[in-house]
Length: 328
Image 1 (cartoon, helix red, strand yellow):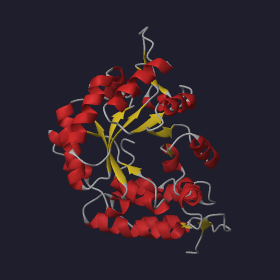
Image 2: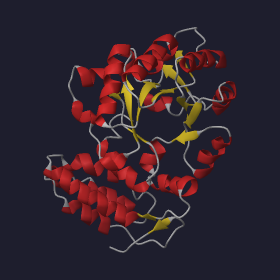
Image 3: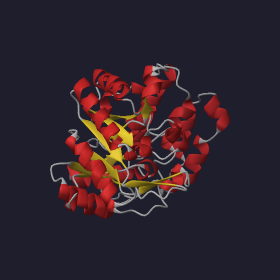
Image 4: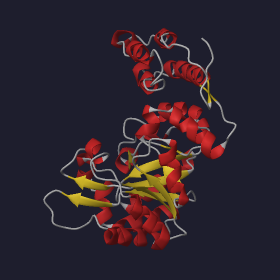
């Protein structure tokens, strides 16, 4: 998620979910090859397994970046064919690439030649362009797209089970307004049983995460994980380790220790604290917790005591299943 899942966010989320595959925010090939923004590839060792998501449309450039991903130690490299933002459309990548399956397939093949880590794709179920009469939102369109990827050797597809509306909806609206159609994903799985299909979109609770596993190979969680990171811990316990227990205060203090090292490295405090804002949503005192963490003057001064003060605003809770709360 752009501007969300940076390396600091991923360090924090890893504390909630030891087993889940984490994704970077989308990184464009231009930023890496021409902007030389190699800091975007940095990650913490605890993040493994972690996937780099690339935005681009040139097979040669995508291959170069895939090789860089492997060199940096990523476990997977993913092609974004789902982002509907206007900026991405102007760069002719993201969701609009669904109209060019052969080009996406060429990127897959080129990247597979350049690296030995898995090359995967994330897409929508189709696209609708405002003012266009083309029918690129039906199952036949999606099947042609997926068939082409499978023929190119793609073995894992992350499917956001909504169409992308280009030119008519904002990225935020594109996450909510187009209806979910997970049945299209099930149809893909029936057609290509060997294809690993990971379902994405609208998953906000355990039932929503586990029900698709009757036919899908996995689920992908986006903003629900960011706004309710304890949801990731529930999934950890339900899907990976029934004995897993989340100690929220231990997670908090691990992140505070991490923040101290990052402040010493020159990172601004507000870049680090923004990922904490949703950690205790629903807890008594959470509103005050967020207010303290939003003190612009103290954030500008890189006052780490601000974070400890925010924690003290939370009221103790009785134990909940899968969650352990320590005092202080």
